[in-house]
Amino acid sequence: MHEFLAQLINGLSLGGIYALIALGYTMVYGIIGLINFAHGDVYTLGSFFALAIFGLLGVSGELHGVALIVDVTIALVGAALLCGLVGVLIERLAYRRLRNAPRLAPLITAIGVSFILENLMQLWRGPAPVAFPSVIPNPTLHVAGIGIATQQLVVIALAIVMMTLLQLFVHQTRIGRAMRATAQDREAAQLMGININRTIAITFLVGSALAGVAGLVSGVYYQSTWFFNGFGAGLKAFTAAVLGGIGNLAGAMLGGFLIGIIESFATWKLGGQWSNVTVFAILILVLVFRPAGLLGESLPEKV
Image 1 (cartoon, one colour):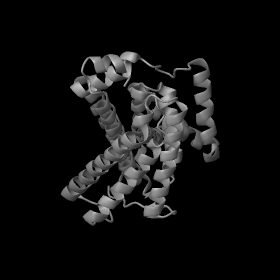
Image 2 (image 1 turned 90 degrees about the vertical axis):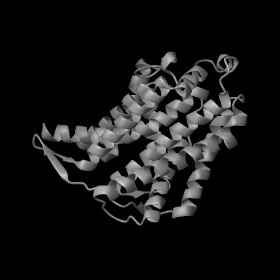
Image 3 (image 1 turned 30 degrees about the vertical axis):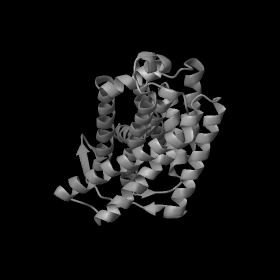
């Protein structure tokens, strides 16, 4: 039972990272119907930005007290903002002109942008994995006989907080309402006075900022990053978005946590080499019986 609960915690912490990335996929798909394959690389870029910010702050190891809060907050906000700006830049330069083109054109463009980002990151930090400072103390807490690493709790808590803030942003703010209206009917939203270009740019900004947060969290959690990280993590996060119901924010969150839990238990019971097989086999089974994903595409909730 203890091992079961320990694997559940592992799955939730892993799933929290997938869920943060999946939100970006589902937001962009919800508003312009594009599978943004470059999103996984924006996530990796977030870890590189955070690493650079820690370097500028002179952080190379574990932090404590006020320095922990201040430096991590600066890196978190900085990585999110920089990734958000990269997302806006990608939308403006690569996707906007293709908005009304056949679907294949923006899809191929997204793959091209992904390769460009990967090569730029390879030029920046080299082809080998880069060590990430373990800035957050990681003592093991014992709850009911189960050892839980503090960093796991931080990852899960941060993921839940970011998702809650996103839900409030989408449902309680004027910009969020504009995003939902644009997702439902772009022409009608434009007739009602909504600036479509600005709304779509903000969607990329928010989705990419969440990927930046996930990049920092991933770097701290795994204590390393690599220019090619985004391929695997992005694929899993996209799978999570599809599993939950792409275009549906709650679905992306649910899918992210489920993928993390399935991967964790598959690694435990079957071995690491079977984790991807298990994840995608379950995805195929779910889609056979529920093609729209577990929660489907609920238009009023769609972003």
